[in-house]
Length: 248
Length: 341
Image (cartoon, rainbow over all chains, first blue to last red; front, side):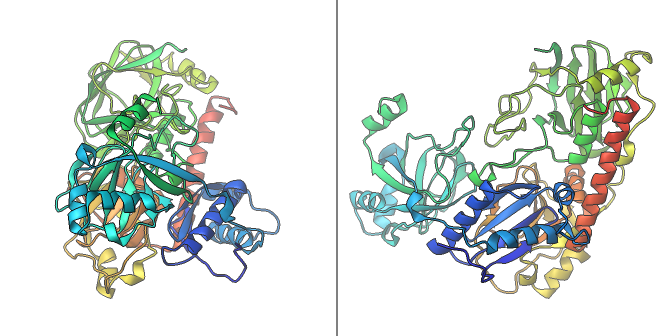
């Protein structure tokens, strides 16, 4: 996969200290791979003054320190340009480089064990009834797909997953729960997700994972990263407890 | 292990440990956080001889009482909360040497909303993901991931050489329980001019999607800070609701400090320190970085107006403001003969 110099992107200022690069306008794997390739490249080769790169569905925001960018200007860069223009020309150089490749082969697959239904999935019966399925069928459909982590956001380590079957889609709850426990697996509309930390929310809860998706003390605090592939695996309550004790 | 300590007698409304924020982890959904009023916090740090990224206490409105358990230099900048040292008024925006055992009290707010206390050396809490900032919703960082409580003891790190020189210079001038410098940096105070301030903003990435009327209303009406405002953002209330020309589905995209989003109810929200990393509402504006600290000092019920500036103007304001800040830092270093801190 290449990002060629066909200027198939848009650069927009996000204020005076960040720029957004839009590489598409929808949620699709091709755009996602471009965003992933650009993010990976910038992490490996940050320009002077770059603070961080935050990828989303079809874009990435690059936060920078205007003073550091100004101080790092080289002879070939105009001193009359604005900082934003300097950042844009540095990004355009990167975006026109042909060696930006987002090989699909290095995608990680993360298996997430989930104890479905019962106390952990109080809304499993609702999701089943809503779609005219049995609870077992909902679990079978949920565990049969492979999901792509399009981006992380909303809460620390929270993945926006793509790839859920429309056959198990379900509307949000009428009144949101004040606390959704850590590890809860839910469905909202055509989306599924896992809550890495306890938070309020209106998703239909179908199960819970014993895995810790977010550990602030780790160098990489999030189990999931943008671009990962996720599969859910059904486990029993006994296995859930064994996971928590570290025996599995 | 340094022996400098500050003990919390009363935490007040909300007191947290904050530094300049947690960067490099937003791609994992981790909020950047950090102090709300960067200008006041950085100034407080420089005044006591710290690097600007050291952790400070962010004190909200009032009610906080602290015991300075060992003789040390502190500075309080930002909102004016009628601070006293053992009952005597404490001068703000300058280094103050305080005797061991003195009680520093934030009794009643006079102007602004948030006050910053820096201690020479900086607060000694562990760095989590490269920052000492407290992220309350995630129970991450700062002092045990939470707001300060009565009885908490905060350790302060060993002061720098510059801090030691400031300490030495002040130790000759005790009057009562403390010794304050006769110079100050209060020209950096924004809290004194908060009667309907002007906040400069750049039209946002979705500005053109709003009705022509709403585009004008953004800059032509007075907004009031809503009661549900906090470190995450300020909810704004105006008489004219802001509307899109036609309904639009936005893809979630990264936001920044000062992004102004408009949810379907038409009342804008200014995203601040503890904002989520991404957002899905249309962005009508982006506050110029130099004016973001004003939101740290506005209280619910306070009013302000937006003024449109270009991206280029916002950038120039940023660079000018930063040059002034660096001049202050250089002046302090020069005054105390320490080129390196």
